[in-house]
Length: 201
Length: 369
Image 1 (spheres, rainbow over the protein chains, first blue to last red):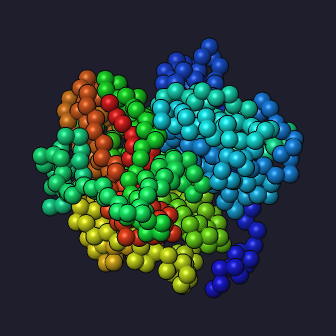
Image 2: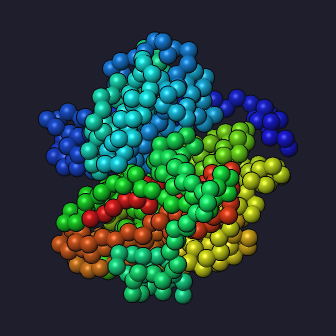
Image 3: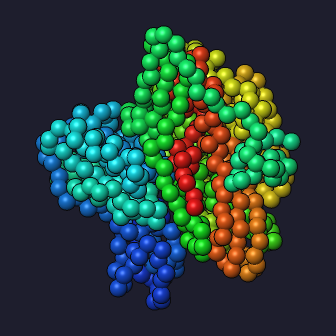
């Protein structure tokens, strides 16, 4: 069958609500006890999603709630309300963030319905999506990509490696306007953060 | 006996370790003549899923030679760390192949400690490896369709990739199996199969324009090839029938082969393997299970058939910590095969050939100390 007709006959696959994910999701304390966290994500009884790699070493003292991990949108840019072009840059990932970021374009999530698109050059980008721990040879590549972008621009740190270094290294030395925790963050977390960043809603 | 690849100072073969390094012909750098020039593609560019650069020697259209340049090398320290902490790092070497890495590492540890996991753990591991293979094969075919700007199948395939991720999440808690395997434990609860219409995927083969981009592109028939690249060239190489720990023979597993050794044959192998994996999964029962790991010392090797070929770990365990660890990721061999297959092709062949090998830079360039 013609692929165009096949696409139409399948109908709309885009979803308004997404299925619950256990790992990664917001964690809560369900039992008393000591936790030996490999990334110090649990300090003085406070769970820090920006450090958590969701390795399950804290189970069953901490358990997942199934609620999507909340991103922190420190600055949004209303001028990107109608169209928001993203340039992803991988400075040292394990491939997980790359794949989850790619999946926000899948029919279930369909980023384009929110006016979110990808661009092949930082010259046309409204936001730089930084993924991975900092690796030495990518430092200059990251700086040049950032400098090439027009103003106004946002920096989005995607995944625990870019936010805090996770378990594998150091984070990139760049201030994030939007911070999306998770190892890797789910497409739902990513999409919610991007929509908030572009419109402040 | 076949060569699999360099594992630390040794050469891993299908019959065990031999003196290293492996004796396969390494790529040589070609020299251009009058009018040739070097074109740099990458490291951060549209069309690439990860950061990698290629130094391409060309006269304008034909590709004379290609070199891959490392950009995102991560240095991961594991020496002297407890097994648990090393496991968390191993899981994150290449998350799209996290089940393959973790299961190969845990098998190496179990062999070092002289313990065999119970039947339920073996079944769970087979299920994880096959779910991971289905997802990755769908992704590779999606990338090929995307390279051809064949948009409806591109998004249909992305839909299926997401469906597999959801099935994995329901079965094992995490969409990429992180935390699903632990020392002496398999945590996957119950197997949920993704709904994939394989007949729909086969319709890709009825599009002549798409096929033309793949046929005759990137022919490689080296006898040291691994995974789908080897099977596409007619070699019946598959760790699933060579490694005794995972009892694939009990599941009626059969190897899929093609003969041409080009990007199209690699896609055909991956397409057929989706169906083979779904059939294996129908006969697998998954439930969580714990087992005891003794406090011993020793050295062991673990090998699995990852979605892109043989993946192996060699570990030395002392007092519950890792003294030595060596990794053979499939992408390292597949990059060599890609570089060998690229000369005499043209620029428009490049993305199709690259994507057909299913290479992940994250595991190819990782440095473990």
